[in-house]
Image (cartoon, rainbow, N blue to C red; front, side, top):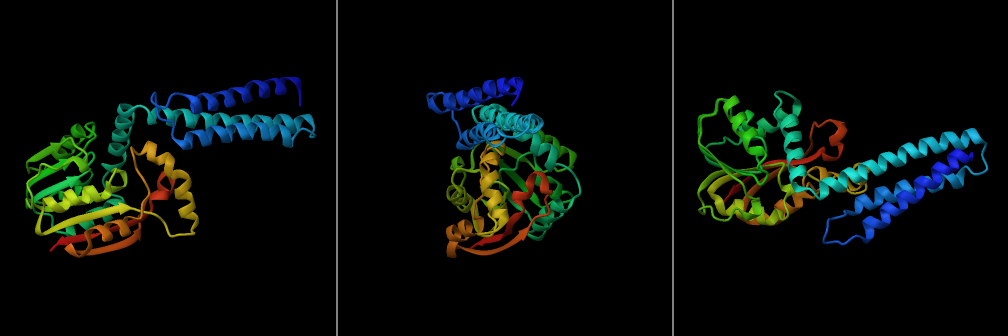
Length: 308
């Protein structure tokens, strides 16, 4: 290895190791360090050291090229790790960024995913008093166009950055029903009058709550007998599949970027909780989502649970 390349490696490698050590030993009360960040930084350091070991007997051009490639990959991994570290420890930045991403992606017209979404909601005949957990920027509002049967709508959404987008989307779609924005987590929505809603909507929200069972309990309590719970969530892929392994790799990253999003066996959780108190009809399917960046979220479950 040339003296210049060696010098760069000597400088880069200790910096990576020092950064990992500092993040590992820092006071845990100061900020959170998700394990995925430590893994990214450790991988970057391992690549740097591995490159020197594997190419030490190669000619100088092989060493230089491999060093350059390794350095670029290592810096990318470190950059991703630091980006995730900032997001993980800045709730406001994470919430704002997630709200902007959802508004940009979910408010578009057309597309196969919107067809799936609206088909579920239209088949369920949404009417009366409607309660939605995690409405985001009003993603489902496009499916309510020309519907005059909604008397009242309540959106339970802890991310207050969605409120303005939701109001704009309601106006854009020409929806006239009264809208109440409740800035609460689904687990904390406990003051609602029991058996007061005709429909509860849960689409792409249960993945990001702290307790799926608690949110389902609040939804059940709010729902009238005979009322409908509309569900569409992404879920785990089949055991032993490549997609399942991919979910395990990218899941921790999307947990940070997606504001708490987790990959769970939603079918099992929902069916086990609702039990025989509901008539449950769930279907698993592959959602028509783009491979980048949502390949991991293609396995889905959808359906309607009617309260007995």
